[in-house]
Length: 362
Image (tube, rainbow, N blue to C red):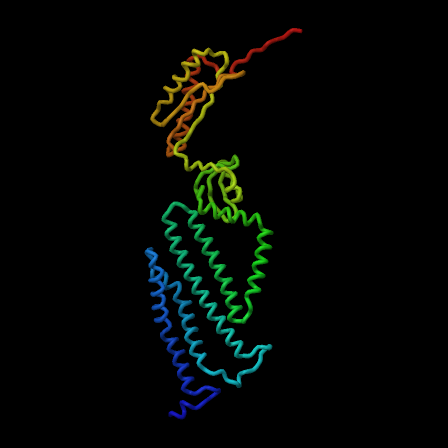
């Protein structure tokens, strides 16, 4: 028996073959238990952030790639203990079979490890999205989705470079230099798109407005329906759907109407020049009495200006921002009618309501 175990086949003893075979079988049998143990350890490490995490969701995400990675790792470590048979040392397309197997081994390990990291990113993004749904700010969800895809893309690129480095023994320094040159060329060619992309980050982090806000930009007023990576989509008051580049949204002066604390109404009364000063002096207090309503928070009435064509009285009042639009419009109509009635009762004409025709004979 001793002689049989120490007999050599293809540069390896029978005992070495049995030992490697035993490790591979053990890896197949225990891979799920070992994977769950490592997944639990990794979960405890992630759970130290203080957030309430779903352990089952985390384990179900990373268990499969972790099982494959551990099985491949244990199997390849065990197989590395064997001596490569000289009988199998032949060339295939200028590459030896041993080099081909070594490249395939390294490539498989890098791919499964990259897959495992991608699953961890998915889990972290899932936690952040769950937290974002509890808030009314929808831009956080869009930001999480963007960064999830961004980091996954970066991780895939790193995994590809690692495959070239360890799987095919390529010098990735030249590749990285080439990628940087290509990136610089693309940056110059897509300058406007990059500016809009950077502007989208400014909007996401600075939050001058969020989805659902009513904004006024470049004489356009509407509700923000989506903040993209290149442009912001706004539903205007005419119910049209417009796209404004993010750079323009950042560089322009934006009036976020949703952040108003009160609604303001301004009425400019152009009074006829024929009205006497005494009547004008009595008109302002009379309009003030009309504005003393529960729905009106504050107000001001004064003779703002006088000129060649009219006396200008400015009436300004503020209402609650939480007031329904129908109630707000009804209040404006009521105050406007009250002012018109007051002017009629005091026989105070507006500028342009009367006209005189002069006939000049030559």
